[in-house]
Image 1 (tube, one colour):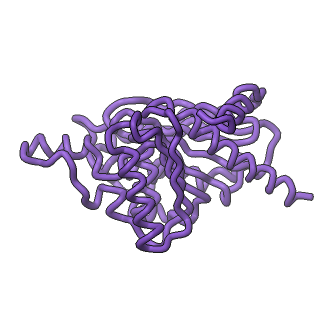
Image 2 (cartoon, helix red, strand yellow):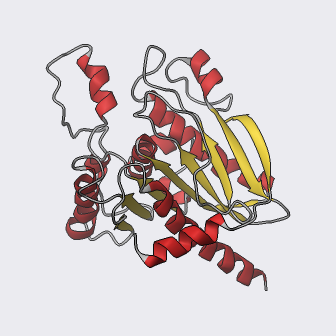
Image 3 (cartoon, one colour):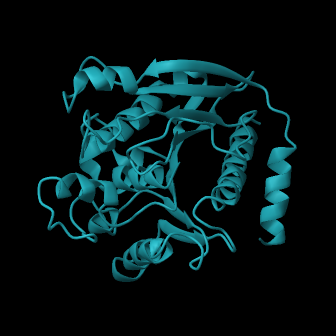
Amino acid sequence: MNKLLLLLLGTVICTALSAKDFEGISYYGKDAPDIGNITYRNERCKLDLKIPDNKKNFPTLVWFHGGGLSRGNKYYPPCIDTNQIAVAIVNYRLSGEKASCPDYIYDAAAAAAWVLKNIEKYGGSSKHVYISGHSAGGYLTAMIGLDKKYLNAFKVQPTDFAGFFPVTGQMSTHFQILAERRKKDPAVRDFVIDEYAPIYHAAQETPYMKFYCGDSLLDWPARVEENQLLVMRMQRVYNNKNVFFYSIPSGNHSSCTAPSMALINYELMQVCRKIAQAKK
């Protein structure tokens, strides 16, 4: 790990945190589209929100946990200075008997839209809402950032958000979606690119996006290369100036998370400084 990453990590770890917590917020409104198991949706689809104390117009990071779309629970990501940056952590429906594709993608969109529409009530800036997640959460981040129909279902656009930061997410159709299909058709291939693949939606016009991964030799097989292919296709084929890629040296699928979040924290702290300067 290079010296810059170590410095960023140390800076965040040593920061004293002071924040207010709001827990168990249901992010589906009464006018939301009825998609999937509504009883399970009402049980599962909640978020927690941590906001900086005595701050106004702060940026917000929406965070989706990993777990292969079939397991896991919301948790606060490492290395984010919640004394300056609000964080919303999200539970979405998990693949299984009660949910399947595309339920969890719509859940991610619903949560992001709720934060965008409501963060000003908590003192934050709706102009500075960012989306991120690790692994399956990175997949969800990329999907709602690139396929407009999910956020459109909740009357917002991907470009309404300040940025999307997938961390080592799958850019082909997610393996859990293929596992769901395989229950009906055992012949389903183990590698598919269709409408449920972020790379399928590569385009010239996208929101600001930065894709993080580990080391190509240590992250999941071909995970780095899938992310590189998506970014290179948008940069080189579509001349997209809003997408970027960053690989964490020596990082595996798990250990790349903290350095990635330290870099994201650094970027959002620059936003905090610009907001503070604008007040003067």
